[in-house]
Length: 128
Image (cartoon, rainbow, N blue to C red; front, side, top):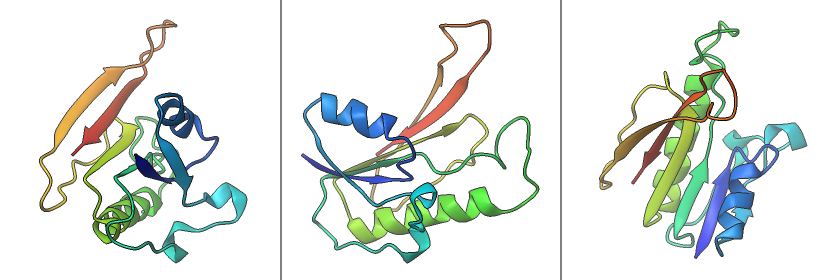
């Protein structure tokens, strides 16, 4: 399966999918000078879209007082609609707003990734 990765960052989500046999193509990341707002794709080329949009505005610490996280979440939705994949997966913090993308059944999974420490690390995952 061919998968498009958005907000790749260090590529850990990409790595997990590659280890399971997926072919992952990155749309780039702002840390490498590539802005998602400039990215466009072709419908029907990718089986799936994965990514974790910036979460600072949604986190419990709310370090940012901007609308950047919502803007990037909207960009994620835009690219999913543009790509028209069979499925998509969004990883983010627990307080991320729920999203709905037409023509997809969706499921929210809240997972505490803090199993390895005393810190709660609740993550929000949405899939098609």
